[in-house]
Length: 118
Image 1 (cartoon, rainbow, N blue to C red):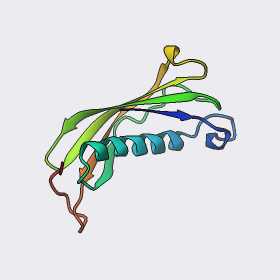
Image 2: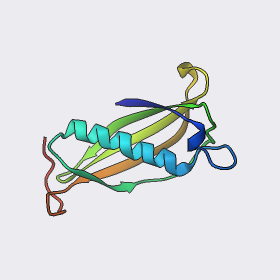
Image 3: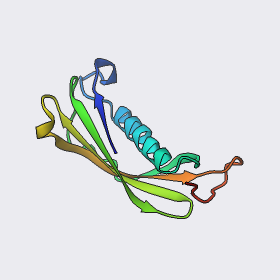
């Protein structure tokens, strides 16, 4: 699954760079959407993001491309590999700026882990 996001002035810190927390929020949201589309009957919560290392700075006006691919499936959880690419001008020259694995677990109404539901 792919999503795009335009980085706006309100997404930036006092030095004019993207807040890392905003990038993590978008990753969480877009990966959650992918998981929910793959398992529409499941109720997911995020349990882990691996290797949170920002490789490049991101400025206002940048276009981010989020590439989200299922990586591993367990009995109660699913993990996606997320890559974030950035370009301020054209999609042909997108540069990798961030990557991580994100894991979701399916919960029942009582908040207990339960098997994934299709």
